[in-house]
Length: 182
Image 1 (cartoon, rainbow, N blue to C red):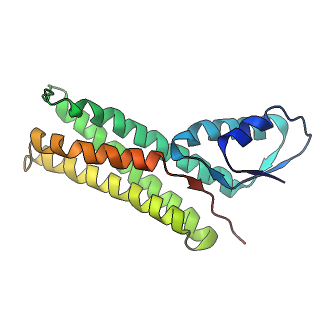
Image 2: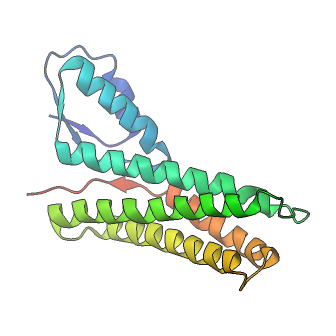
Image 3: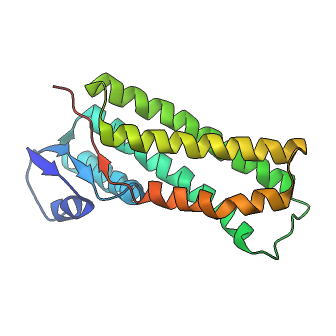
């Protein structure tokens, strides 16, 4: 069994020619690398007839999806850091897209949380990460709803962007620990 503790471990496996191998995911250095790690892992498993548990594959896939949604949120919010930014005619549509991304993040949180609970009941590192992901998704959804309903304005949203982006960066830099069933 080959234990994977970082993305470099996966890259190192590309040079191996073992006919059969069981891969066990232990951790990744950050959520932000999860998409690349998932793509590489799938490639290794599919092309080389290697094995990785379905639970590990499901969990890394979910974390990769969370990373993708977090990157979308960063892209959507970053232009609002410019103090000269003004809402354009596509602003309501942009807000709806941001809200959909927040809702996707919340849905992924639910799926990932189910996997963790099913495997080990609770894993402190993942509970903190998943709780923070849920908070970011919920806060963004709430902020967007307030602006769309007219109870808050663009300037109010703009003031809240820096702390939100900081939370997204913290989530993207969080180490990924894989849950295990005994």
